[in-house]
Length: 382
Image 1 (tube, one colour):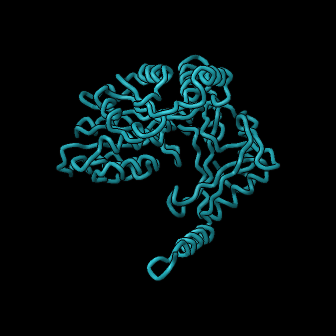
Image 2 (tube, rainbow, N blue to C red):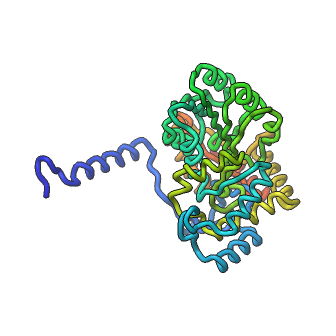
Image 3 (tube, helix red, strand yellow):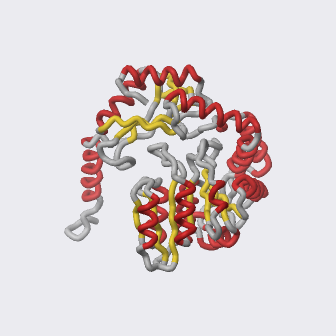
C-alpha cells in the first residue's frame, strides 16, 4: 500500500535512475565484460584480444601442476568447504597452506581467508579500536580503507609514500596503540614503499606495521624488517594475483593470529575457502619458491623493462588525463586487439585517469612489442 507516508519504491527508482545518469555523464559508467580466456589471449565478444589487464603476474592460473592440485582436492573434498572454518569448514589442505605460508614468509603463524579483501578487513577491524590510531597511506587499496572504517579507530591519512608524514602523525597522538598500514606496491601507480625507512619509523614509534604484499611480486623485499628490534609486522598476502588462484592470508606473530581467529568477522562468519582453491594456492607457492618460480620472476622483470626501463613492478600506469581521454585510448587499443583497462575516479583522483598495464610472465616479447607500438600510435609513451 502506498500513500503520503509510504511512497513505495518510486522514490528509489527515481534516485537510482538519476545516479546512473550522473555516472554516464561523468564518463564513469562501468559494466561487466566476459573474457573467455586461458592465459593472456582470449575472446572478448567476437574479437580475439591480448589482455594486459590481469593480475596473474607469473602465469600460474593455468599452470598444469596448479590445475592438477585443484583437481585432486576437488575429488577428495568436493566443491566447497560447506561451513565457516570454526565450525566444520577447515580441511587438512588449509592447515598445509598455512604452514607453507609461515615457512615462505618466515613468520610464526598464518591464517587463510576466502579473499585478500577479507584479510585486510579482518586485520584492521580486529586490531583497531577507539584507543588505537591507524595511519594509512592516501593511495592504499580500497580493502585497507574499508578495514580502517570498520575498525572504529581514529584514522590519519598520510601523504603518499611520505615516511616523514607518517612519523609526524604517529608523534602527535596520545593514544596508547598505533598501527601503520600500507601497500608494499601500490595497485594503480606501481610504485613501492620504502621498507627500511618505514620499518625504522614504526620501530621507533612502537607502531604495529601491517603491510599488504598483494602486488609485490618483483619486490620490495621485507627481509630488512627483521633487523628492527621490537618491531611487530603483519603481512597480508593475496593468493589471487601472482599465485593465480583465489584467497588471502595474514602472516605474523602467534598472538595476533589467535586474535584474528577469535575476532575477525570476515573469518568467523563466512564459509571457508574452497579446498580446490587452497590446494591450487599451495602448489603455486611451491612453484614460486623453486627454480621455476625464479625463472618466471626473471622473465616478468625482463618484460617490464621492455615496456618501461627500470620500473620496479608489473603495474605500469600511463596517465591519460580525463575520463573521456582514458576511455578513448582504451577503445583505440581494443580496436588493435589489445585489452588495457581505463582506470577512472573514484579509483584514482580526478584528472589522473589512466591506462593500467599489467604484465605477466605469460606474455611474450612480441606481445609487449605490439603493445608499445599500439601506444605509439596514440602518442602515449610508457
